Length: 111
Length: 113
Image (cartoon, chains in turn blue, brown):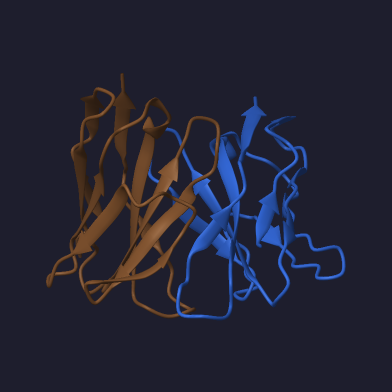
């Protein structure tokens, strides 16, 4: 069974501080990992995916297969980063490309 | 290009009733996935439709059923509603395959009294 764990329900930082949102996963195969973000009153949208290995809005995430983690990081948080962040896993095999989500972390960036 | 749309926005039903939720996929997308998001939880996969056939199902009872139409729009039907069915129901569309991104709709908020 595949599982995604986000240990922090809430995370509060000050503007300009580094931020790290934790994500651990459990999956026997080779997963695809994603971070989704939901800003206030907006729909869920993809922030980044591990296979792209790109930085979006200053955020990066590295897949660590040894630690089964995919933590989201940003060196200098901005107020507009305040949002709900979900880590998600997609199985690489089979014909069903469902996403398994964590429970989410609400990030608040204070001025 | 039109994004994923869902209707209705909000819905209130009583226990035991039946409900139908609708989703129009993004232009060109042929796969639709439905998710249930209970309060304080992440979205949970219900099922996926591709070419009008169910293509995978999560841990939901048979009273959750769906349809996909030739234009790739989709319906989620829930029979014999229970209080625990109160949630935000999300629809996501994509091209079929491991690579494509799933684009989410705004959701339908269902309240069961």
